[in-house]
Image (tube, rainbow, N blue to C red; front, top):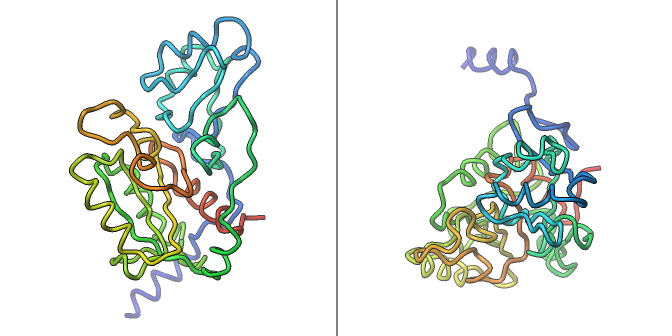
Length: 249
């Protein structure tokens, strides 16, 4: 017991404050669209190397609902057309809110009625619907001492009967569709659905496969999409807190 107390004293407080700084160097955050992308053939160069068709060279847009943040587009244009910053605050909201370069959207917040019912707490049941588990690992990291999701009154629960909503990862495989729907139906209304990662938004790298539904939105009504492949825990924190009307100052 004494050894545990001493270890805790030596470690100190490791919980990250909000707003947090940039992501570590190995992570890719919010894409920055350069002027070269909007003119000439740079957008076409970027689109040719995009494995998930996230770049539309005609409309000059990037669909973060499809983007897997591989960085190939940045390499193809030498960073002149698209550059990935280390900003963890990615656009989130409805599906169309994830498209960069077109119409600008303001951050989406939950309906006032739902926010008043939730108060300052939110209990989520997580369902992995056929993905690679990368998003699940990042979501689980929210519970560690560094990100400490519980300090905001947000927690994961084992039963949908105890949940206010769903947090879903993966493209929704055909074999997981029924389980996902039954879990959703077991949650009392009003209920919310949060879809995280490119797979849950569009099918990601699995899009078009005979075995998947190409995203949660084709199975359930989604209230909040959070992009990434996988999204960093800070991205998840910013998006969920903003949705609850509690954005970090």
